[in-house]
Image 1 (cartoon, rainbow, N blue to C red):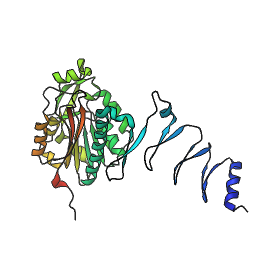
Image 2: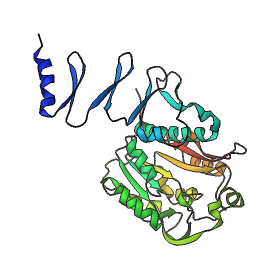
Image 3: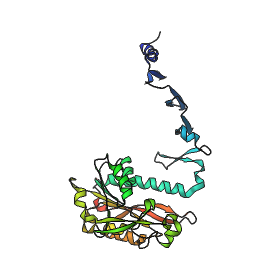
Image 4: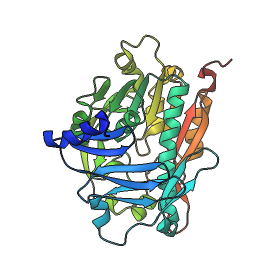
Length: 335
């Protein structure tokens, strides 16, 4: 004899409702499209729209990868996925088994991911409630912070017109993301910036090493921009925050120490910073890594993470690091 539950399941399709029975007492009800149930393994099933748009790959113990149809039909051989445990953390890294063939690219991608995770953790640990995003370009850094869960204020600075237009659009629907059409430096002034170098626009000319490394440096155009001192914009940026705990992110293509100098005595207000420091200098007049790190340490910041940004394919040498530094004395007290 059928239960009332089973009778209801049989009735629903007549009302235009699709029912997928998952077992005793469990069903999925949907209004449009059929659903298919794909067994992944003991105790795990995947429920997908039944139109052949998805594929499932085993990527290790209790780990599966679900791909859309576009991924399956892309040019080239299908990926061979494997899950790599990350120590005893319980996390797994998903890799194409052929990724080992390009060690440099996978290492740099991993470093970018780990840097972002570390910054998010430091912002939370130190109670940061305002991030100064200097050299914002089109807002990539700020968007990443939002994806990682940071909900505090972001104040972005971008001097070039094209990038600023895209930055403004990105921030349009985020009420706690301010954008300013200027650069930051040692003094308030108007100057020219080299443009046309994608995300590498700089107030400094390329070095001989930079020209040899990047074809984009072969041609350039300039744009007149406004430069402000950091200490002159802080009151406006922090307005309305009761107990400001700011963090300074700088990515200005060789100009970070100039931005830092423009903070003057107010650099003491910052609980942490992030700077792209150069081992091999791409720009004339940019400071070497040792000089930049020494200047930051002299103001009380200490390194919490170093992540390679670029590496030479031929030699393996690191060109630049993302250096994350925090003021240890500003860390919250623990019991």
